Picture 1 (cartoon, rainbow, N blue to C red):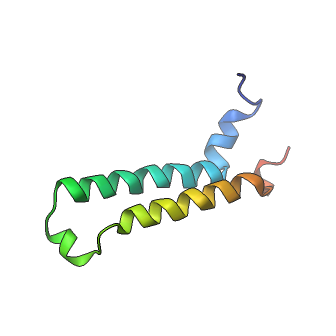
Picture 2: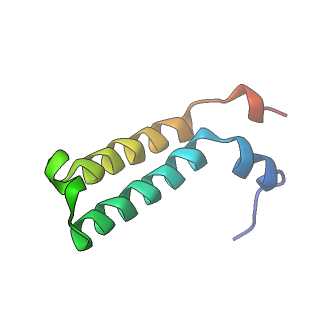
Length: 73
């Protein structure tokens, strides 16, 4: 496996990468809320962060196949 030529630019600018990272953050938040239940769990329905993580992962997959002007050579 080889990295693409401009991998640094892709990591900084690609929406698919940004959304994938957001998915990871939301997944971690879902875990933290489950482990450290507190006042936050009273205000949010169960699975809120998991649902948001699913939506952002789908958005990342869609963003991966859409051309992005800031990444064109």
